[in-house]
Length: 116
Picture (cartoon, rainbow, N blue to C red):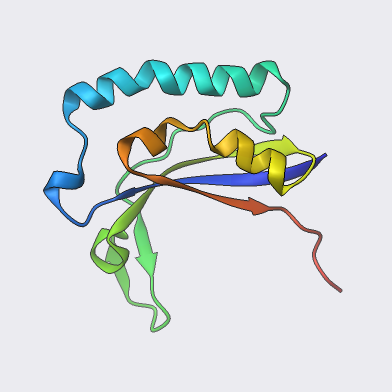
């Protein structure tokens, strides 16, 4: 089994792209069910962890800005590490992510061994 990082992102380009409080509340059960299903299959590689939404970005000139939203117009809403045989299986897991119903996306990355 390989480990894959699933990064959840939402678009912050405009107010209209934001889900309503009701949509967010409704999605909580979907998230719980999705996480529970992954865990039940023993494919959750580490326990769930909450992340703050503020964040800071350190730029190449060492300037620090608050939150990534100003620069990239989207935010990492969370991430998990899952176990899967290959990208196909990891993408299949990602396709069930509730962030997709809220207009977001899931980036899938496989862990690799360091070279050298």
